Amino acid sequence: MNLHAQAHPGEATTSPDPLALAKRVGKKSWPYATGLIGIIVALGIVFRHSQSWGDVATWIVAITTLLAFLTAAFAGLVAYDLLKVENARDLKAAEERLLAADDRRRAEEDRAAQRRSDQRAQASRVTAWFEQYHDDQYELIDKVWGAAVRNASELPIF
Image 1 (cartoon, helix red, strand yellow):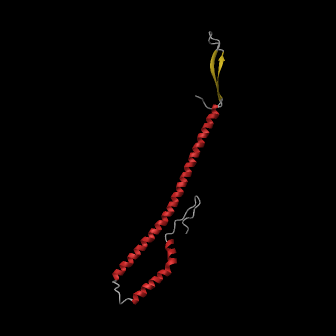
Image 2 (cartoon, rainbow, N blue to C red):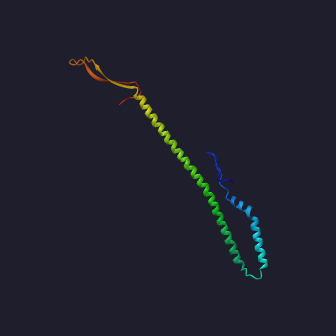
Image 3 (cartoon, rainbow, N blue to C red):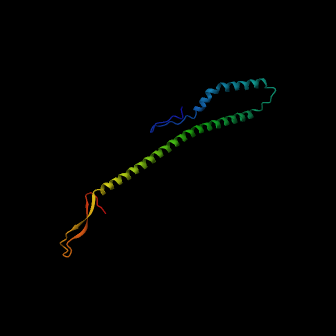
């Protein structure tokens, strides 16, 4: 199983097989292990009377200690493989968060530009000028200057 295969967005990824490493090592090293066991058995037969091989309890402790060490080493290798997978997932998630933040920033910039454009469009429909009014209400003053404002937009102006 390839742990480094990249999945497409939205595609489910499978977790690594923890026994894949043990299967690979077992396929490659079983002839060596069989040969080593054969050599140990042959040495045991040849030197069975000249060496003190200890008692059965000592051998059981030695074998279980060796098996515990091998199990711990295998667990460490599996944990390392899983760590690589999780690190790859974390990196992908961080990239996706950066892309999402960039998209949000661009969307906010677009909204701000649209608001400025709308404000300019409204402002272009408002005109103001000074003009001279003839006011019959005031008998003393026959010409009055004042501001004239024309709002052609749909929105009020302040």
